[in-house]
Amino acid sequence: MKRTKSLVIGAVMVGAMSLLAGCGSDKVGYVDTNKIVQQSQKMADVNKDVAAKKAELEAKMNAVDQSNATAVQKAQQDAQAEFEAYTNSKDKEIQDYFEDEVGKVAKQEGITVVLAHRAVAAGGVDLTDKVLDAVGRADTSSQEANQQAAGQATSQGATQGQGAQQ
Image: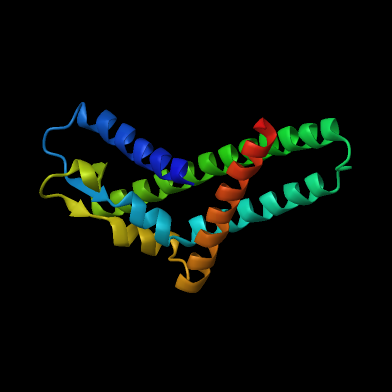
């Protein structure tokens, strides 16, 4: 889900840059997108969904006749394509969700420009905790379990991809 972090950062930056084009005396805010992605309940839920989809696809692959190399390879390719499409849709879903929530919080706070925290050298209003409060914070025990599940899904997907290449 590292790509999700990049997408969220990109969305914030694109929105901010378009606002900056016509700004003079606007109030600037910033968010720590890494913190939001790591600590939000929405991201924890998405990680659960992705792990469940991965398990579903693995079960499908395990059901294929292992003695038929062509069938195994096709099942791996199909599963990989389906998993990629699924994660792409989840990335888009989470990007749109966080973009909307950041916009709502910014509007409530009278902020007209929101940047990623790394883009702000000094000043500005930190909206990170307010956004986390708006989207809901993940329970830390479920958050750690979700991060482990997402890490396993990523590492196992890479291992399967290597197996298909051999």
